[in-house]
Image (cartoon, rainbow, N blue to C red; front, side, top):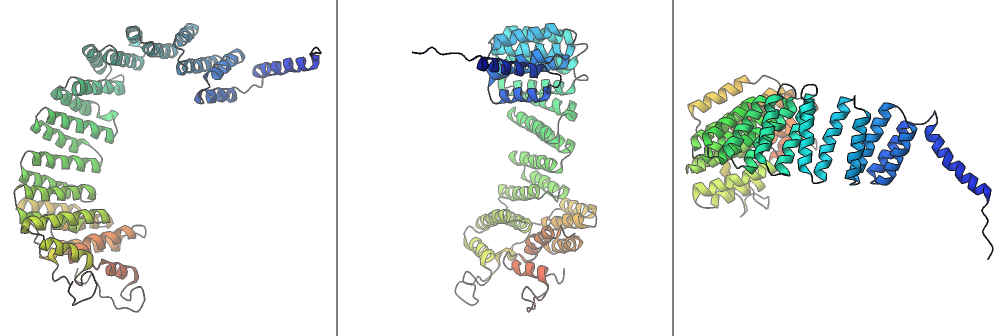
Length: 499
């Protein structure tokens, strides 16, 4: 066997390539950001060992203080991801020692050290680290101090099962840092509420904490989060069997929130609470108030009207329940809500009559019209009467009339105002006036608003006015093409005459 010869040229080439890589990192024209992105990409791809090697190489090449800090921190996080926790602690200690004058870095390193101690299943050591940082940073770094106490509290509660000590720390954060770090103070109070609710099952204390959170720290939260916290207060009062307090909390939430949709939802909740307390008349008044207050929030208004039907049914007022169901059907303006409202009307016919006759007639007429399924007049399947048109609306109370009158009067002239008036009249049981207002809204609409305006005019205004879903296609045709229709040869009657 011939001995293998090592060719010097190959060996030298290999050395030269390695040297070039090393020199390239140290060269004056080195690209730090490019190298950093490459290392970060390795971390994201879970190639942790390659990332760590790249960090060490870059630390040798890049000597600016800010670069060294950034690279060391990348190394620390990569060690954590690679579950090298003891090595992480050493790297953090070296980092803190190297930059002892950097208070922000010192605090970040201490927080991460506590986190790693938890990963090592050493919660007592973690709490000690957090507490030490909180004490050292209380004066000059309130945000870091508050965060350290929050993490200590979480460790005490979750790892050491010492909820009372955790609550004490949360109270300290909430009281001490309310003015210095509002977000963390709010988070501390949220944790207090959650602990009382989920762990202590002390729903009254939880409700009080949620209420305090929404009152003292409202500015910290967006409207959606605030609404969720308000809802928590309501639910906890109910679990504590305090319905009056729950009702007051829901009313306060409606008053304090900014979003019209969220305000309306809490108004609905108010009515629901009254209905649950067997106070249907008061519940109906609340639902009507919601309709008058937020007439363009149609999801809420449809919900409120459906609950009005329920409130009448709760008192076995079948005729008024049927009339309220007709209003629900009148005001429904899309396929889903029309279908759902039709089922409510059919159920109301059944309850009022004790039989399915008029309920079936109603459904058939709305679907096929007077000529029945075959579409031909004077045949066996003709439907003799429009049962919906026979239904009388409930007689509003004097207070309800005043409420609707004031709401209509408060609406401005113009597209949105006419729409609001249209819905108000329909829910008031005045379909002719409602159709007239939707007609004005259609005329006032911009070209972009025309599709929505025509749908509301026909599917709400004219459906309510004619008490029929059938035949609305001809009204759409009139709106689109005028009296001559799509063919240009017809003589369509004006469906809006007399409005």
